[in-house]
Image 1 (cartoon, rainbow, N blue to C red):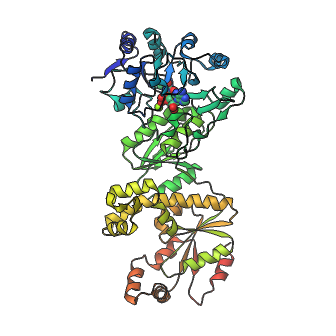
Image 2 (cartoon, rainbow, N blue to C red; image 1 turned 60 degrees about the horizontal axis):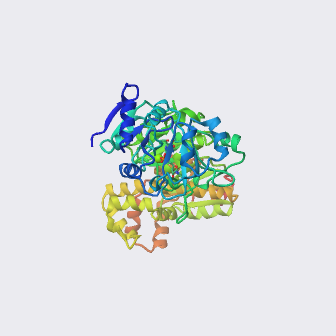
Image 3 (cartoon, helix red, strand yellow; image 1 turned 180 degrees about the vertical axis):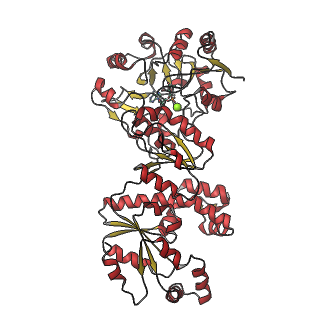
Length: 529
Ligand code: TXA
Ligand code: MG
């Protein structure tokens, strides 16, 4: 079908949109939060088409939009008196309230639940279309399911052109994140989705409310969602998104240490030092961050990057909604660079005895992060397995488990393969290492020691306060690895020569530990801790 493009300020647009809706069609309309894909809420067949156009899971119910309080009564079993109190303060506006539904609401709207979500938008154009059509309008956000919600008509066209009857262009949405969803069906009321109306604003009217755990956490396997929409992967660009907590200085250092180009999603004025960046709002300004976030997430794909690192928004006020949407677009992947214990990098050539030094540091109360173990753990992550099989072939998965030997055979066959393997696994190893450091911090470790053979080639170097290189004479290293791994001198030399020379380790380190048999490393470590 051809999608009609209408401008909200053209004389006939409102009438045209209302007519389409009365005839059972689909029209994307601007609201103050995000664009909605509207249909007659009382017409089950019309509502079905919303699900088809968006590719939306059938069990995710829709919000019904009205223009006045009188319209609500027939849609619900009974209007809870608290709805009037909420309406007085926040309607029309970015608030959705869930109530027991009446039989007028088709199952397509409520997705089989016995409740219905109601909202009265404040956007002039949305209100006029509701009034002109004389209908309550069921409208989810007008994006393809899973994509960031649309805050401009162009976003709607990007996702739904040819699949809906019309789009009404009313400019940019002012709030930028979807409405707050609260249910009065629980005692106390539960915030199901944070949005333009803050938890504090709700409590002003309702007294204490509870916040659904789904706002901050991934649902566990088999757990029932109070708000079905919260269980799906959402708001996600094609690129992998990671939220980065910490100061701008820490963020900058961490991003610049990445081995492949990542897209920096940061605050106004911060971007220009990065190769690829998108800015979303001002630091410490939740309103401006909310306004920009979805457009920024869409720009990530336009800019062409596999990974995006997003500066963490403030998570209070409307910022709670921004943080909640980002958590979902990041599939809950958060890296916290704010570490309160010293982090020491530990590296050295094979046979230098860095493991021995690590053990000595562990005895002094340091936690050792073994990146070899993390490398094995990284390839257990389903997302990593997905990327590996996309790159190296689906048949590296046998009976649901990764065949590590086969992966190694394919990856190490060429330099490109080796680089691709690192590009896929290193970000996850980094994330796991930082997670382990936080666990060590909690359990009272004095310091964390990151033991990594290729530390200086890893983004982990960015989180280390000081780096130690362990060095030993080549003859000693040769003897050690021949004995340790029972290999010939030729093979041992091959391994030694595959690594950078000693000077490289000396040049890059802050601290050098000499670990020849006659040099007492204990004394050298003494002053360190
Ligand atoms: O700002 C908004 O709310 C936008 C604009 C267009 O009004 N609409 C919107 O709709 O965001 P949608 O469908 O993308 O999100 C509706 C959310 C979903 O998470 C859904 O699961 C939840 O509200 N919801 C709807 N009816 C519900 C019900 N009866 N019980 C629990 N959750 C419900
Ligand atoms: Mg939505």
